[in-house]
Length: 118
Length: 113
Image 1 (cartoon, helix red, strand yellow):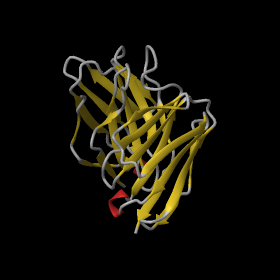
Image 2 (cartoon, rainbow over the protein chains, first blue to last red):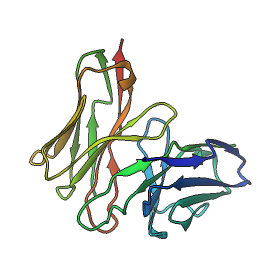
Image 3 (spheres, chains in turn red, yellow):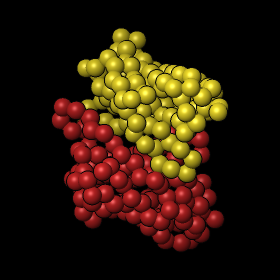
Image 4 (cartoon, each protein chain N blue to C red):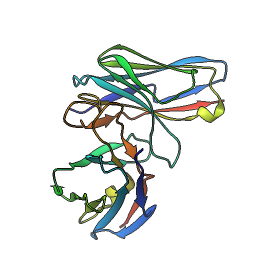
């Protein structure tokens, strides 16, 4: 089973709202990722967690705040977003991080949360 | 950093024909090359991958080939079916601290019934 689940499926929020996206996997993976994908573009990496510690932040604005409460869960807290932040937000996981010794591990994506900022 | 080019941006084939999608990469340290299929409204699905110690890998109707000297890798789909219609992304990564997947821009494959 290579399932990554994400909730909610769709989210509409105003620029003054605070909301959270949730991601869950039960594959025993120790690395989890947040990506942002705009229409007709490839996924863009935002954050990487490895062993529940933030290992990569791709210079993402502070209005996006990631959290990894345990090895199965990943949250993305949203606050004071802009309309240009509207996108598909994808979560992914892999057995170990891309910096795993000796090999790169397969990365599996969830279905995404379609976010619209009004 | 790594740069992955993917051409063409769209490809249309007749059902039953073969489709070939090619990607080139720039970083000779890259050693892992996955392919993702993304259907409308869904997340990317890993369909096949290849590592730099292998030249070719097959899984039923799909295969991937890697030419390390020329720094390119290709996805081959045989006996295409309408359900193969999707956006396909290639990617590349290396091992080491802070390595990450670098994606190509994606190609929209349309299979005409």
